[in-house]
Image (cartoon, rainbow, N blue to C red; front, side, top):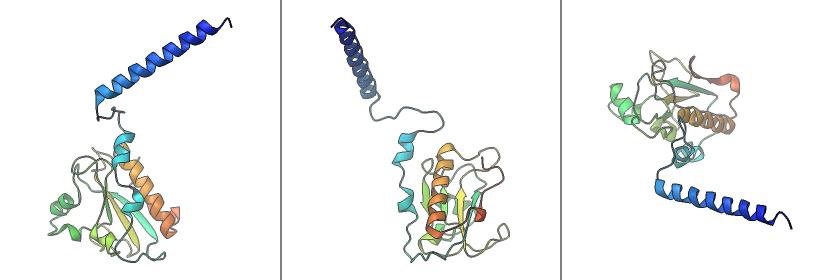
Length: 182
């Protein structure tokens, strides 16, 4: 019974620290603490990837056999802005299946699904891309030089690629990233 004063002191210290912590959190209101380059609270507010990869058209398991991740070549944007910058009359015609925003045009890590994915249409080869009709293209909003992908974009793309590769049984050898991805 000689350690009862010690137990009482520990319990009082625990109660005080919990009270102070609760007061600090209430003072912050609904604003999450800044966690440097990546904040889990922001990440969890985004739509789940499982919801993002659903399409209006039937998805057969042999429809897709390759995934390509590429940079938009811009420092900001979303589907509509990228279409406009490319001189495309409608965002429905953008030549990729997903756009992953960087916080400048859409939430950081937000995955936007394009009409091509929803309808399960192939990307059209162009002067800058010579892929196959079975390639899933993921556009990451960044120029790849001055502005690289954010931590949130990296995590979301990794999650998106993983889900797509599992769903369509795509081998790692058929998943391509830009040369300066990380």
